[in-house]
Image 1 (cartoon, helix red, strand yellow):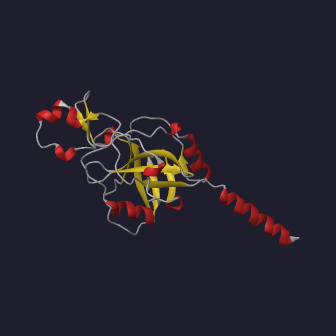
Image 2 (cartoon, helix red, strand yellow; image 1 turned 180 degrees about the vertical axis):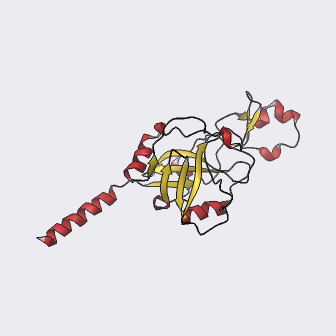
Image 3 (cartoon, helix red, strand yellow; image 1 turned 30 degrees about the vertical axis):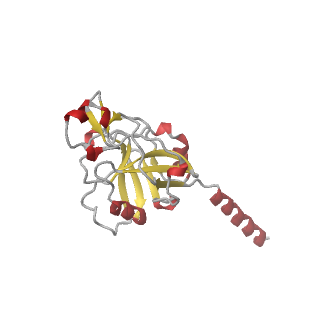
Length: 216
């Protein structure tokens, strides 16, 4: 009887494991253009100012605020992603929506810190849920003076940025205002990503479920 009971428990555990959601983060094979702003080469700003070709083709122009947009929202499809994730499901320790943090284990944290994204545009990523796109954004270089107007991942703790021995690394997870100014950051409105939040909650990796979009 005990033998059958143990077999039943193992079967339940196996089924539960198979039904667990999988959250992964992928980089893109090639950079996609900004959805925000207008093509820089079509603007008077480009015609007046010389030596701006180094900004092309991925920098756009915000004609309303008269400023450059280095990294914004972008279109993509699954075929644009690399075959292997840079951050695997088991690498994600937690999503802290109260403190705007994505907490990663040593393996993934060190990998991102060694990645050195472009200081100008960052590195585009897509977070998937069960192999389907959930949200997209930019991994920003912590040493960059540029910013993103979209969802961003950035490491802000310069005291530990070269430490490869930590058990976990806390990356800021936010929406930028296009600059490197931390005061301009906003919370990600996670109410727009209910399935993703549910997956974090069901796997006991959701530290807090603050869904208000406000400056912090």
